[in-house]
Length: 138
Image (cartoon, rainbow, N blue to C red):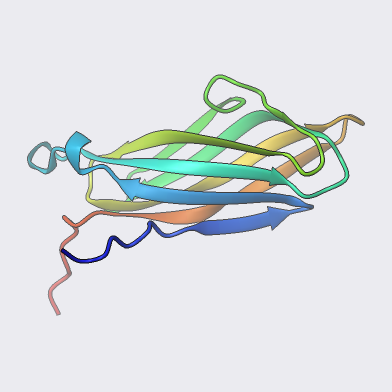
C-alpha cells in the first residue's frame, strides 16, 4: 500500500491571528451518483498577538465547480464564541456538502477585542477537490 498523503493545509495571518484550514474529502459520506460530495475541514485559530480576541461571527463563501454560490453567516463557530488570550489556540472540525465534485471555500471571522476593537480575520480560500472531478477535454 502507498503512503497516505496528509491533507493540504491553507494558512493566513491577520494582525497576529493565524488561521489554518485542512480540508478532507469524505468518501463514506458522499454519494456521487446523487450529486452529493462531502468534505470535512479542520480549522485552527491561533492568537499570536498581545490582544485577547473573541470569535463573534463567521462568514463563509462557497463556490462549487458549476458556479453555484453559497454564503453562510452566523454567530461564533460550531455554536461557540471562543475567547483566545495571547498564545492560545482554538480548533474545530465542521463539514461542507456540495452538489459538484469540487469547489472552493473561504471567508472571514469577526473577532472582538477586549478593548472593543473589531478585527476581520481572513479565512484563506481552500480547494475542495474529490477524486470524482473529471478533466475538461483538451
